[in-house]
Each structure stands twice: as C-alpha cells, then as structure tokens.
Image (cartoon, rainbow, N blue to C red; front, side, top):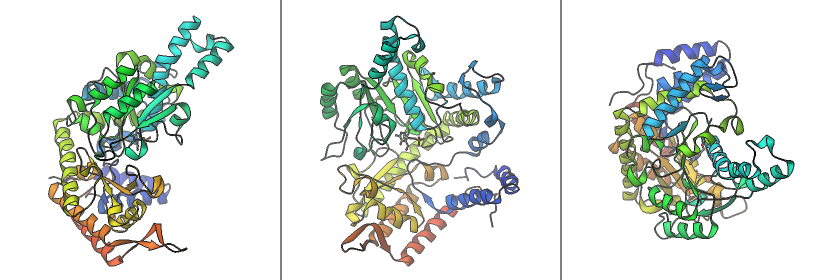
Length: 480
Ligand code: PLP
C-alpha cells in the first residue's frame, strides 16, 4: 500500500520553521511527536492519524473568528465564511450518516454529550414547564415556577452502561457532571458470556423508568443491537441516546448497518470526530427533527463559542469519510482487530468476550499475572502504546485495572494488515509473558510496578520500529 500522507510534507516543514522562530521548544515537541508516532505501535483504540487536509484545515485564520449562534443566525457580524464551513460540516454529516439533523459545534465528545443531555431536558422538561406556565421562555417564568422547573431538571433519571462493562464516565457517573445532574442506574454484561444482557436491561428500565437510556461504549468489543435498545426505550417512554464516539468510523464506512447502525434507531446520537472517524479532535450531535431546535441551543447553553477552524476540518474529514475508500478502510479496521484477537488467542491470551466484532480488543492481563497498569507500562517500555482499562467485575478497580484495551484504527490508516497484526500479537505476548509484578516495599506484590528484562523490551521496540519503517509516515520530513 502507498504511504498515506507522503505528499504534503513540505507544508509541515515550513510550519515547523515558522514556529521555531517564535518558540523553538514547541517546534521541538511537535517534531518529537512525529518521531514517536513514526516509531511506536499506536494501539490506543481511540486514536488515529488525521489526514494532512484535516490538519491543515485547522491551522489557519478561521481560528480567529467569533461565531456564537447557528448558521445564518449569529450574535456576531462577519460570519459568512464560518457559515460556509459549518453548513458543509453539517451537510456532509447528514449525508454520511443519513441523519435528519447535524450539529457540528461541540468541542469534544464530552461536550457533545452535554449538548445532547440538555437538548433532551429542553424538549422533555423545559418545554412542557413553559407550556404549563403559559410563557414562551424561561425569563418570563415567575420565581416560583422557575424554582419548580430547576427542581425538575435536577430530578431526572438516566440509564447507562456500567463502566466496567465498557461504558463511559459521561454516561451518568459521579465523577462527571452527568452523574451530578442525573439519578443514574447502570446496565451491564452477562457474567458468563461478557455480552450485553438486553433482558436484564429491559427489566431495569421497566422498574427505573429513565428519561434517557444511553447506549454506546469505550471498551466493549462486540456489537450493540440498537433496534432492541429503541424497543426498550419506547416501552418505558425513554429517549434513546447513542454515543458512537468510538465506532462512528465503522458507521460512516457502512460496516455497521441495519440493527447495528445507531442513526435510524436513536432519537439522538453523539460522537467524537477524532477516533475511528479520523477527523480533527472534536464532537458532533445528530438527531431527529423533533430534537433539532433543542440541539441547536448547545451554544451558548453549555458550549463556548464554536471553533470555526475545527468545523472546517470536520467538513474535510466527513468529505473523506464519504469516499468509497473509507468503506474499505473501515472494513480493514475490523478485519485487523479480528486478526489481532486471533493472534492473541492462539498465543494463550485471555480476551474479554473471547474476541471482537469491532475495532477493539480487551485483554484480561490477569492471565499473565499482571495488573493493567503494569502491562501498560511494560508495553510502553517496548514501544507499544496502549491503555489500561477495567474488565467486567474488575478486582483491581478503575486505577490499576486488570485489562489492556487495544484498537486498530490508527495502524490500519498506516496500511498495516492481517499479517502484521499477527506479528504484533506475538510482540504483545512476548512482552506480557516476560513481565512480572515487582515486589511491594511492604512485602507481597506491587500493583503498580513491574519487572521486564531491558533486553526483551529493547528487542521488541526495535522490531516495532523496523516493522513501522515499512509503513512510512511523512517521509518527506527529515528530522535528523
Ligand atoms: N464518549 C465516549 C464513548 C468516549 O469513549 C469518549 C472518549 O474517550 C468520550 C465520549 C469523550 O470524548 P472527548 O475526550 O472528546 O471529550
């Protein structure tokens, strides 16, 4: 396969020189990041390599513009070019995902979820509250009616996937604002199979009667049936929100279709744009017509002024995602994840759910006698970048964990295929098999520290770097 991003190197060489003239340490950090990305195996499931067109769309004077409001309806003058890029981002998003409405302003996935929560609260709590009081907007409510409405905002329920089953902190967990806003209950996976237990979820939903059911995950290696999720939501009068931050690229690339495509089934869908979708860091909300006006209030309700340069990059990334090549890319991401899982299973690794149907694999490293934190550190010593993650019913909690999450969106962009995935599975197994828990200062074994022979780490890091040298990244930039 041809080097994906070879031709645009000149623009970056010049950019580095301009930055070096002002703050050389920043230029050095940017250059060093390129070296790391060239030489280390990037297996973090939520990362990717955005294209030069996406990166360049962000580094320009669109960044200088204030543009609160929506397309054609701004609180600032002179927004015609921002209108163009925001409208293009929304148009491409509607086309790529087949959505009725798209809102391209959220600055991140967390922000997209906040916009979605408040859109649902606006539709289902605020609008009836205003109607009851016979007024059109919150400023017209009496102090008493306003106090009642605020109490109602704070008294709503949400049902989301539990963290150790693979859910995300923003799905109603206490450290995040969603857990402080909503009375939350979670659903999980079957302890035997590790698969989502829809009937247990249905029973919880019937009893708890949430306003919102959130589907979507950060670390669940299987598919979710959104038709069943919508059926459950309808049965209990809940709004179905799907957070497809991780798998948006698989939806855009038409690998997830029918019951597994969230867009036709959910009332509202949120996403990041930088993970499998391979765009700029940012978020987005898609919704049905009934929620559109509520979603569009995102700024200034919960968002600061939009980032026009990032919306420009979202438009570029979505134009890329509309191309047939992106479908092949998305399929290769899933094929590679399966090859990686098979390579690990063949070597005796324990995987949560026994494999994968999407872009990620969750290794239960207790099989190697390690915590996730020890495994993550040993792999990093060896040039393999991953992140630790809880596994279901994790005895080591959310800090040390017992899992390592790995994903294929980034290395697939780089052009690696099934044969390389098998070799990488071997490298991971070599490192984890060669690592032991260090002794704790007070006796017993540490959960934090590990022991790995430096010769093994160096040998694996060298092989990782040699392997990646066959899949060059910006070869026109010489950093020597
Ligand atoms: N939702 C899910 C499912 C995620 O996995 C993440 C990121 O890890 C987010 C939301 C938050 O995205 P961001 O980091 O862009 O705020």
